Amino acid sequence: MRCVIARYPFELTKTGVLASMAGVKPEPVTGESVTIGRRRYPVKQVGAVVTGQDRRDFTSGEVVRAMIRLGFTCHSRPEAAPVSAAPRQPAAPEPFGRPGPGLLGASAGDEGTVDDVGR
Image (cartoon, rainbow, N blue to C red; front, top):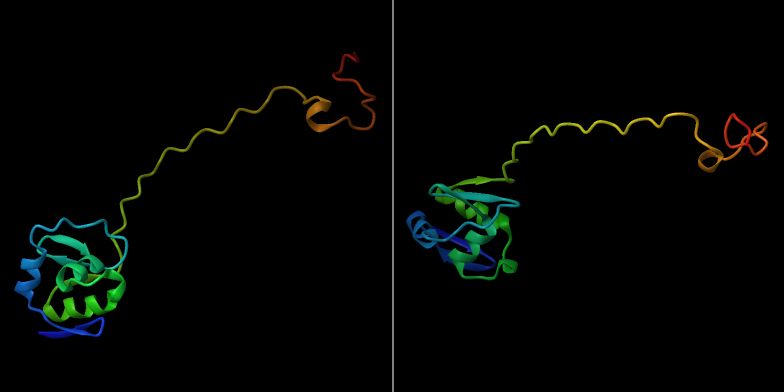
């Protein structure tokens, strides 16, 4: 199948893409991806391997369109990792007694005393 990626024509086939990606370790998927064989690859990685071009030279949309036309399954974003419910931490215990003036300041009527004893 003839397709244009980054203004350059390529003659791609499904078996050719499978052969090109054989033995290539998938990078972590952070955006659009394509399933090739039993592995899921970022489309930019597939485009770079298949075309030999720099990833900055083409868009992921160009590669997605080509891969869909060849019969591969494309994904719009990575699958979300399962969210584990972390146990909630208990709140800090309440302080005992009345705070002194150093923490909240003296109020009218305290007349500078630190506690009820009047020292």
